[in-house]
Length: 101
Image 1 (cartoon, rainbow, N blue to C red):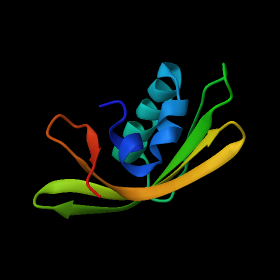
Image 2 (tube, helix red, strand yellow; image 1 turned 90 degrees about the vertical axis):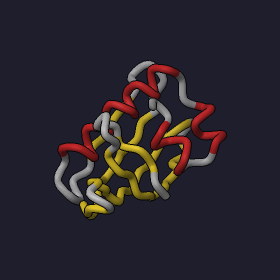
Image 3 (tube, helix red, strand yellow; image 1 turned 90 degrees about the horizontal axis):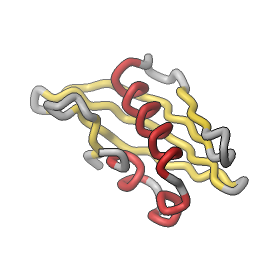
Image 4 (cartoon, rainbow, N blue to C red; image 1 turned 180 degrees about the vertical axis):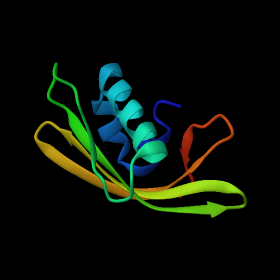
């Protein structure tokens, strides 16, 4: 589940540039943002050991077949370069948010 959001929305090479600690920060922030953060409020993460960072901004919340879903925008900063993506995620029965598009 750690790479569920990342892998589907950003270039594979960006995901490969992130280490386990980056992925932990990313996953915790993205899951919390989609579950608890108001629309348009930016949530940030940062790995102090290597300087990698990112943001996730939840957008519209909607229901699809009795499932809660949200659009979102995100950025990942690796090696001084910012990479942007957007997508849609839906909350699974185990309460993990998963990319749908």
